[in-house]
Length: 145
Image 1: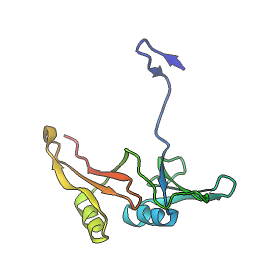
Image 2: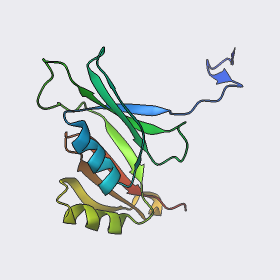
Image 3: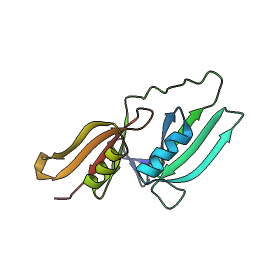
């Protein structure tokens, strides 16, 4: 690894591999992300030793990600509900109006309704929803100017 004078790594490649989201019910979370958001399950496992169930879901055709790691605590002390952290996951859509119509029909809670973003004339659309555990998802339809 080579560091330049600004402290930045040069000649290295980085990318996001996954984001872990805690869930209280893995089956319900997988159904939400696959049926309503069009992701596919890449891997699913239960670890009795760690008392965890994990599902990897995403849009990539390969296992290399990026994807969401949905993790359910299976221990006896596991909370019945998961308190979402102050984070969000951004998902881009080709037709956000159609996606939002489908989500509304499915009864998904919108934190912020579909709105046009007018900053710098971008013409982008945005909406915010919550998954069944309250994790926030920013949905966007981006247009280059």
